[in-house]
Amino acid sequence: MNVLRVITQLNVLLTSLSSVQMTPIFVYGTLKKGQPNYFRMLDKSNGAAEFVANAHTLERYPLVIAGEHNIPFLLNIPGEGQRVKGEVYNVDPQMLEFLDRFEGCPTMYQRTPVKLEVDEWVGQGEKSLSGGSTIEAFVYSTTAYQPDWPKKPNYESFDAYGDHGLVYVDREAR
Image 1: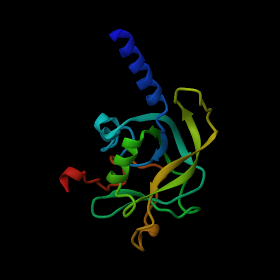
Image 2: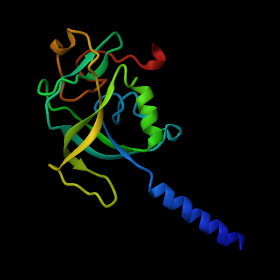
Image 3: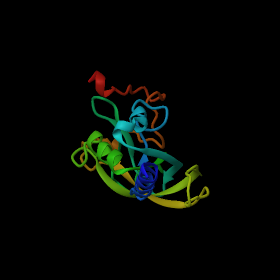
Image 4: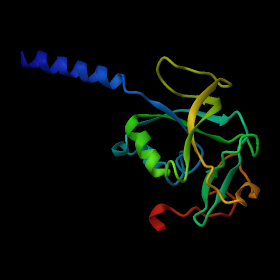
């Protein structure tokens, strides 16, 4: 009888887990694979994040490196800049809450919807997309920028270790 009860409880738990609402997030900066804050996407204490695609924005946006810590900012100025490359993750509510705090949302960054073109889909499940498909995800962009930021060099892709010569300052070093 106890075994049957445990199996029933496990089935209820699995059903509730599969119904967890996942939110697609587009990351273009230090949270991407190989970048200084990527480990935060893997940290299960922050929640769950599943990498599903490489993609780029359908519209152009200025992606600049700015501030005293050389932070990548996607300026919410559609139509200017470049089609920004990044990664799409499906995140659970706990990770979404963590990312909002980490990104200083809504004061430093705002979570806004963005249309993306899939470069490579690797996600699992019933939703399987091919390259060239369009999807929508949330991105952390900003309207709270200095007047000179739109005039800064803008990038198609951010790499903290790139040849731009601007050294990203990790949070722990600030």
